[in-house]
Length: 373
Ligand code: GN1
Ligand code: MG
Figure 1 (cartoon, protein in one colour):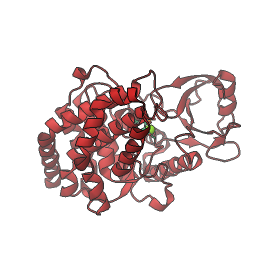
Figure 2: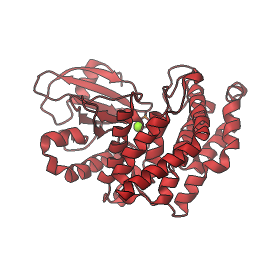
Figure 3: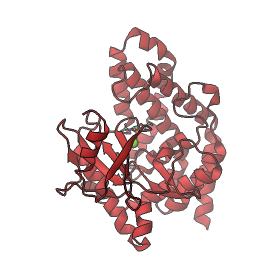
Figure 4: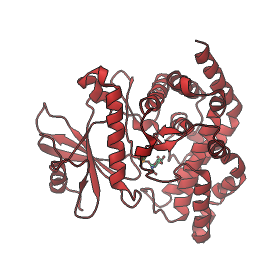
């Protein structure tokens, strides 16, 4: 479907809101779906965020939408005491279609969903100060609390083995066999790193599979740009619940650290700009543990630094694999975008290795402090 005013308005009007379409603009920060901000005509009406799910990546787009609606409903129940106005700022509110479906299916076979835009909210692509890191920690930690009690059987496994390292290695091996010599050459250094870290990068998965770390509902895409903040930079709401599945809390901790502590953007090509901000690590960990310490064991805490390393690595591995596959998964803006992303993530992995002992010390210190209160 061609994206233009007329078509977007038509899609928008399939949903059960009372608002009148004024204009739209595309929000381009995501790597997979197409997301549009919908401005409505009347000052008292809300604005909306409309999304077309990428059915190439998400084979169960319908179930994905149902998953996230159910998660929102679960959180809404838990936060009911806040009252409607506050509630609408703290959890995503999805709108059904005029025929009471949570999704709209267009003639191309693509699924759409829509949610209310939270007025006055903002996002950060990069963390500016310790306060934001701390607020981010509380917000993502609280997401774990708010999804507690959600029946895991109700969640459809939208991308099976999403954070499973052996699965991602297998995809990488397959990609290696089919990659062009030119791409193999450009990826040489990253490929070397993937082989050399293999054993360590499977540790977290082994702990999970041995039952040493409990399963729970996880968000699975806790980059800082998926957190909304209010005008005073206080954490408001976690967004992009597309990949909510069953996992371990380390996935969400690690993925958040990956973006919060990187002083550069995920695709910065000047690698000298990438440093690992330990102060932000400490602030995020403090906020996260304040919200989750009741369900985190000492063993869990001892593996938070490993989680940061593992999830940063798995992102690099997936970007590298996509590069070797000629860019079939992530949206790219230029030819070598994926390998630039991978190099960036692997540089961060190296920096995490350099800071590993200190990160572990901080994790355990914060864990003990909170449990002594
Ligand atoms: C993708 O599309 P977006 O930006 O929400 C990806 C995440 C990665 C992220 C990297 C389903 O998320 O796993 O962490 O890019 N989502 C999927 O920025 O693969
Ligand atoms: Mg996402």
